Amino acid sequence: MGILLSKVRIRNYRSIESLSLELGPSNILVGQNNTGKTNFLKALNLAVSGITDISEDDIFVGHCERLTPAKTATIDIMLQPADECGKVFMEFSEFWNSVFTDSWISTSADGNFVGIRTEIKYDTIKESYGLSRRCIRQWKDSIADATVEPKATYFNEDMRTYLQSFYMDANRDIVQDLRNRKSYFGRVTSNYDLDQEIIDEIEEHLNAANVKIIGSIPSLQQTKEHIAVIGQTIGSRSSKVEIEPLARKLSDLNKGMDIIMQDSNAASFPISQHGHGTRSWISFLTLSAFVDNQNQKLKEGECEQFILLTMEEPEAHLHPQAQRRLFEQISSFQGQKVISTHSPSIVAQSTLTHTIYFSKREGKTMAIRYKSDDSQRDAGSLFRQVINTRADLLFASAVILCEGITEESALPIYFTKYFGCAPYSLGVSIIKVDGKYNYKPFLSLLAHFDIPWFILSDGETETINAVNSALKQVFTKDDHTTYDNIFFIDNGDDYEKHLIRSGYSEIMIKAICEYEGNDNFFDNYISSMDGQNRNKNVVRNYNHPEGRTEALIDVCHEHKTDYAIPIARRISEQENGEKRFPPIIKTLLSALANEIGAEKASFIEDKK
Image (cartoon, rainbow, N blue to C red):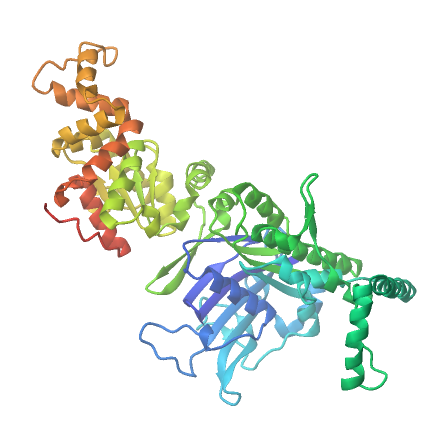
């Protein structure tokens, strides 16, 4: 039986003013950039490892607030006995009881736990910020209510040995690790257990190899003779300066090590000449090797170890297939994992219940863990329809949901004209739900993570009823008229009929003819299709006052995927600024601008 870091509370650390979360064996942090994911990872690492690289920059400072020495940052963590699946037990194993002792073990109604409060506070004597730890005796509901030992409590030697935290930032690079003996690569390659007789024999061969290399290469021998005089000048008469082509001691071998990769029959190249993605990946694998090596030794000594891996953006510089392979390796890593990512591929490969969504409101980090209260069928629908296909919405500042391909194709054209940039530039995702009855899984996920959302929908009665049904299942309000972020097209129209009713018929016809490369395409369509069956029971009749309009509706419906973009582009490029956006589109984009705080392009209202 192992242990689990099951709960964390943070107050006044970096961008986090107040945050409380439950953690599992695997945790995936998602959300936009600059929302505080890295700060959360560093807080966890700090609480377990006790790193001392801290300063006033680690203290949260609110808008217009002046930092005073009295302000303290606090990180509370709870460790509980648990198995690999995260199932919590009442009591620690005999091993962990001996590690924590009564100095740290506390008891609650849920069983034994170890509560550790880490504080960053200003030391008036040292005139700098320092770190202190105290034992939490009663966890309670908040940092303010917790019962904490009044004096600092120090980790004993066993806790420092068996509680390990490894933080890997997005800049990890095996090339840097190769020359750093304190890196995971350096530590694992310097970690050998050999008899002294074997060590002496190996080092004797290394010395002999050095002598032979220098003696065989005249330029090295000459260089050695020239630089040797410095030893007599700045040292004693017996001082020597040597050239070492190879490390002479076994403990220094890592200094000369390199990693070589070869593709098929191509030439071999050192890892420094490969891309950063490959180098980053290998850096993680060396950590994994280091942990495996440690665990093997601990098992031989009948000991256990708690490993916490906090890792930023494992997908950095890797293509999607490589991302998936790396995530498989991370998933099999022996320890608790808290990983931040911006990769939809990794999110889709994970489990929804592992997901923690980060956002920032008024400069403060917020976080929500997904908790499923749906049936298994609904949970599967969420994963299949949303996460497995459109996981990018978890990284959006706002999401616009629409029923079909026409709106999904046309909206980015209007959006770009309205804001002067593409939707992704403002973090907005435009997503088709593939049918009027498919809104629920998207709304459920967006509501759970409090991601701003909008609906643009056709106005048919059946569609309105379907949306109201989804609203009723997800929210308490089931009447779309009470929402200011749902936009149904008036008069029961669909998108194409709305354009026609708004006076865009001739522009639509021009766009269609231009797309088809034939100025007479629409007239030819009317001639060829008039009198033909529209479906089994209806014959087309375009020979009446509204026939041309009916033909335009028909041709648009029959070629939705072809005509949506050229029609939207033609409309948005009109000289009259007020006519560049159909009414329903302009109303939607105006509401979106207010939600995300974006400004529309200055020329939109111009009339020319």
